[in-house]
Structure formats: C-alpha cells, structure tokens
Length: 470
Ligand SMILES: Cc1cc2nc3c(=O)[nH]c(=O)nc-3n(C[C@H](O)[C@H](O)[C@H](O)COP(=O)(O)OP(=O)(O)OC[C@H]3O[C@@H](n4cnc5c(N)ncnc54)[C@H](O)[C@@H]3O)c2cc1C
Ligand SMILES: NC(=O)c1ccc[n+]([C@@H]2O[C@H](COP(=O)([O-])OP(=O)(O)OC[C@H]3O[C@@H](n4cnc5c(N)ncnc54)[C@H](O)[C@@H]3O)[C@@H](O)[C@H]2O)c1
Image (cartoon, rainbow, N blue to C red; front, side):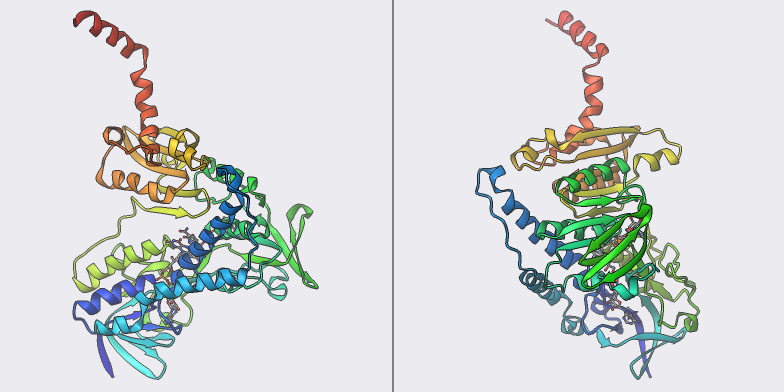
C-alpha cells in the first residue's frame, strides 16, 4: 500500500493550488479527481464558460447599440451552437494550465476516479488504497435543486448543462435572482431569448445592498427582462414542448427552457466522511480558522466548506491549508476584506460591509455616493448607469458597493485601501488619471470633503486670510 505525505480529493480551484505547491516543494502528493479532467466547476461549468458567454452577449448588445455611437445598427443573428463552440474553445485554452501532465511533471501523482475515505488515514480510489499523513477535501459544490412539485418530470437546466445548449430558447425562465441567475439571464436576453427571472425574496441579489441591487434591477428591466421578486414557484409541468411554471399569486409563466439557479450544495456525499470521522452536514464541512476539519490531519477548502463559494476564496483557503499542512505554521483565515463581483452589465462589485451591516454592528456610518452619470469616462463610453457607494466611519472605509462599468476592476482600489488601513483622505490625495473610471473613487470621497471645504466656516476663514495676508 502506498503512503503519501498529502492526499487531495478534488482537482478544482482549491485542490489544484494545494497540489501544485506541495508537489513543487518535494512532498509525495496524490491528487484524485472524479471527473475525467482537472479544473473543476470554475473551468468547466462556472466562471470561465459564464464569463465567456457574458462577453459574447455583450458584443451582441453593442452591435445592436451601434447608432448610440454614430454607427449602423446591426441585429446579431445568433447561432447558439457557434457561441457554445467559442465557449468550449476558451475552456480548452485555459485547460492547458490544468493539464494532468503539468502536475505530473512537478512529481504529483494524478489519479482519476471517485475518492472515498475508508478510515481516517486511508482513501480508496478505483481498486487502490492510499495511506496519507494529511488529507485535503476540496470536492466543491453542485447545483441545489429545490423540491418543487413536477420539476423533475418537466425537466430543467442548471449550470452543468447550460453551456452545452446549441439552440437558443425563444423563452427562458430563470429561477433565482442570485449571481448565477442574473448573469445568465442577462446573457441569454442579449443573445435573443425572452427572459423572465423569478426571485423568492423582495430584492435581487439579497446579499447585496438593496439600494444598489434595485438599481441593477432597473437596468436589467430597461433591457427588456421581466423580473418577479417576492414570488415563489409552486409547481412546474409540461404541455408538449412548453414548460408551465406556476408561481404564487396565481402567476403562470410559459417557457421553452427553465434554468434553476437557486444556490449550491456542498459535495459531501460518497466521500466516506463518517468512516474518516469528519463532522459534516448538508451545509458542508465545518472547519476552524486553519481550515482543519474535526480530524486535525484532514483539511478542507473551497465550496465544500464555504463560507464564500468563490474561486478566489477557494484559492485563498488553499493558501491557508498550505501554510498549516505543509509549512506547519498556524496561519488563519481573515475574512475582513473579501471582494466579489456579479458580472452583469453593469457589474456589481462589493467589499466589506453594506450600510445596513454597519448599522447592525452599532456603528452610525457616513454614507458617500457618486453616480457614474457624472464620470466623464463613463459618458464617453455611454456606460453611465450605476453608482459607487462607500460606507465610512471616522474616515476609515468599512465597505463599498459599486454598480457600474468595470466595477469588478474598480473595487480593488477600495479593497487595497481597506487592507492597508488607508482612509478616504488618502484616496482623495491620490492623483487619479483623467479620464478613467477610477476617478469615481476620488469623486465619491470628495463628497465628504466638499461639504467641509465649501462650508460657511471655511468661507469665513478664506475671507479672513485674504484680508490679513497681502
Ligand atoms: C455558473 C457559475 C459561475 C461562477 N462564476 C464565478 C465567478 O465569476 N467568480 C468566482 O470567484 N466564482 C464563480 N463561481 C464559483 C466557483 O466556480 C467555485 O467557487 C469554485 O469552482 C470552487 O472551487 P472548489 O475547488 O471548491 O470546487 P470545484 O472547482 O468544483 O472542484 C471540485 C472538484 O472535486 C471533484 N470531486 C468531487 N467529489 C470528488 C470525489 N469524491 N473524488 C474526487 N474528486 C471529486 C469534482 O469533480 C471537481 O472537479 C461560479 C459558479 C457557477 C456555478
Ligand atoms: N460572479 C461571481 O462571483 C459568481 C457568479 C456565479 C456564482 N457565484 C457563486 O456561486 C454561488 C451560487 O450562486 P447562485 O446564484 O446559484 O446562488 P445564490 O444562493 O447566491 O442565489 C440564489 C438566489 O435564488 C433565490 N432562491 C432560492 N430559492 C428560490 C426559489 N425556490 N425560488 C426562487 N428563488 C429562489 C435566493 O433568494 C437567491 O437570491 C454564489 O453564492 C456565488 O458565490 C459567483
């Protein structure tokens, strides 16, 4: 029986980072992936295909918007099969980084098959049993499909089959107004589907600041999407090729395709976690701040443990695992400054607290806002929808929500300010190039200083100085 220093279950974002570093440091590492290729959800069914599709749909939208720029209008005659081929080609291009041979060249053993613990020190894959000193569970998550009457019989799509569609559905109902639902709803709407979103709660993106989420909703509706919030789907049925989606308040939607995007479920089944003595629930595997499970030699990272089901967080947690399991230093997670982005157009980016979250901790924050309609670069690009909103206390930034063009890039200036303890005065004092979208940060913080600068007190002071000093 083989004995390894580190055995990793799952070759997605989290598992691959740990495998690559551990093998290059000379440890005996085995990486086990149940699919027939490495890369996980992000590469095959998540970030990469979704962002590629979003960009293709944006190009279609820009073609249509030609006259806004003095150019001819051009209605894109979309062949979804060709778009799907393009999406696949991008996956293949990025897949090169996750080629098993690359990992093998570092000395990492890569095995394909379903891994399961048979006891706290041993994992079985196919007919092999592998003994390990330490383990990392990085098995990710899968789409949660709610128990709605008739849904299984009527059929539905999830992110696992959406990107393989070759025919554009004329009508698409999206169940769930979270990041997956909204990104895909807008992309399909721009490619030509009539899209309706059904969200159970009163606001889209319920984890975001409602003011900013509602501004995004207005924008999506202006593009022709129909959005029902505070609406529950009660039953789904099929009538020939049409799917009937029965909702609360007697609303029935007719559609050609139904996308279920109501959240994720961590992959904990079939892993032999009971045999390993690893505590788990259907919400995932609880870990401490060093990413250790209830068995201290078994670590977990990524969607399987949360709390942020995002690729950059799986990678961040993988770094904590590397610190603890490989370098044996007690490195701990710190979630005070975590940025994330919903890649709608405009993008909605967030870091730190919302206004309400700050109030909930007993702080009375200063809230600074600035609209993109007054940012020159947004005007030149005709991308003026949205605003930046900063939540500030004693000049320190507690959080930010940005809805606007390239908000996902812009949020990182705020993330860096928060991480380094820079205050709004530092942002105001930093020269920002003209005309960039990043000027929104100076303009936002200057709404704070503007009030003080042009106050009656300062005006009196200026008058007085100018009288006294010749
Ligand atoms: C549509 C969509 C869009 C997304 N867009 C973004 C985005 O823009 N930005 C972002 O940050 N995040 C995004 N995410 C989230 C992101 O994909 C996940 O957070 C990320 O993939 C988590 O990485 P992971 O390593 O935990 O899991 P995964 O990448 O899913 O990897 C887990 C791997 O474990 C394997 N596995 C499971 N069970 C076993 C077993 N028993 N034995 C062996 N192998 C096993 C799986 O096959 C899989 O390859 C998106 C998700 C979706 C669904
Ligand atoms: N841009 C990104 O970074 C990105 C993109 C996609 C996904 N993700 C990650 O994947 C995770 C999963 O995304 P998601 O959008 O599937 O889940 P989510 O949990 O973030 O959002 C699901 C939405 O569906 C709603 N909902 C739940 N049950 C419902 C029902 N029965 N009927 C109608 N609405 C219902 C919820 O209120 C919520 O608004 C996210 O939390 C995120 O971390 C990230």
